[in-house]
Length: 257
Ligand code: CAA
Image (tube, rainbow, N blue to C red):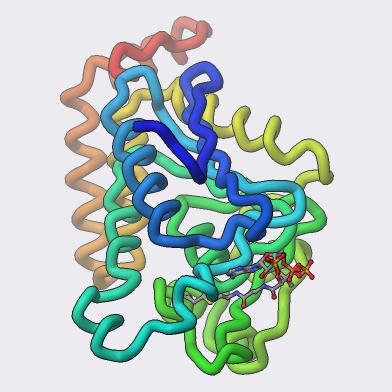
């Protein structure tokens, strides 16, 4: 697929997707969404890729869903097309996805980052849900995911006032996994993706699935799922290799990467 709104490349075993609508601060329009979904699916089925990084520009990861595209939408149109439902397939990607966020991650941009498995932010990153200032509310999971990630008080504050959160605040409340200096974001994020890509892929995918279960089921069911997944790793040659390598004091060479 030829991409108009993304730059798609590989760095070693890491896939790298750069949102590329600089004049619109990477506002997420339908064309970009379709391309992103396609690029993620391609990497998910590419044996040479073990994890993907999604990033934007220094000024904006993404400034939200495209307001110009939504301006004339009416209820019937939004409802009949089930507007924004296309995003639902991003969490179905089985290999890990890291959001590398610099600058604005607002509205749909924040929602996209939250759909990734974790967020690495540069010091200049700003997160927010300004939809209320436009007379709407988040529509791609913001009310649900932000509340789960940062708790009710902060989610209400962000969504009802529309204020932005700094990288420091986002890290302190659990939205962001780590903050890196401006200028080191891409390198650090790709390094993290490559580290993941060097591990046993079935175990990585099971681990991702198990953590996600924590948000979808009871503790008892989640623990049972984790145990069954844990048991299944003992059917992998990679488990033998990983444990043998530890005992032999050498680096493992996983077969299923
Ligand atoms: N949609 C469409 N275009 C956008 C956009 C968006 N979400 N955000 C920015 N742009 C465009 C601007 O219209 C502008 O284009 P023109 O030059 O053609 O006028 C260009 O990007 C640069 O933007 P600004 O001039 O506004 O840049 P700034 O540095 O002064 O401000 C900003 C930056 C604070 C991020 C500001 O652009 C802004 O507030 N953007 C909108 C943020 C927002 O409300 N996001 C939520 C969208 S709704 C949503 O996402 C709903 C959902 O959950 C489904």
